Image (cartoon, rainbow, N blue to C red; front, side, top):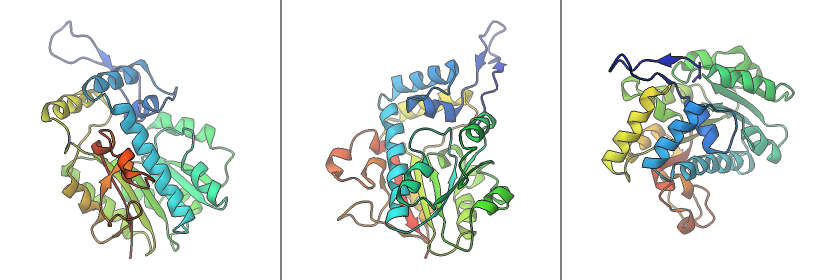
Length: 281
């Protein structure tokens, strides 16, 4: 998911302005208050915010779900190994920060396909022996699963927490994202977990979804929002964890998972994100 600095003619007219490509990883970084982003990323983010004012809250909602779920895996489920795919840029309170605060022995492998993300991650993670970064593409599971750096850090004979938050919605239906997720799960032993979140259009006006999706046409990745039944398919065969005390096992809105006060957490930003945690039996 790289920002290469190149410019692209839109082809409409000879005088059409060239526009640098935005990076979805760096747009996310900008929404979370980071500084590793370009003018193109910031411009695109502001365009989307004009259509969906809750976009920044949505990013924080996803980040909160990711952190709460990772902490729960380490503290309550006893998971000590994590494969974080589509991790984006390292920010504050990364996966390893969260889980190693629970158990310093936890090991984490980050995976992203943005070359500039890889360069930044290698610099920031160079001194952490239990944390690795691998340059890989979600859509090529065999390459990631067989990567020697992944295998050196993680023991696939033991349970692993597979984290795929706000990334699978960049995989088109034609590429069968459900089969891709299943390929990763097939490589994990029983007792492993899937943590997944996915953007949705269920509570959004169709015109807003269409215009927001169009903005991503100039991005390095396209976005594919999905319905709740489509998200539930990712958890087929898994034992879904109840999202909060008193709730039934279910795919829920992002802000509700792990919420101490579900009523307060249930807002418009949360309702644009489906999330769940599932255990492989």
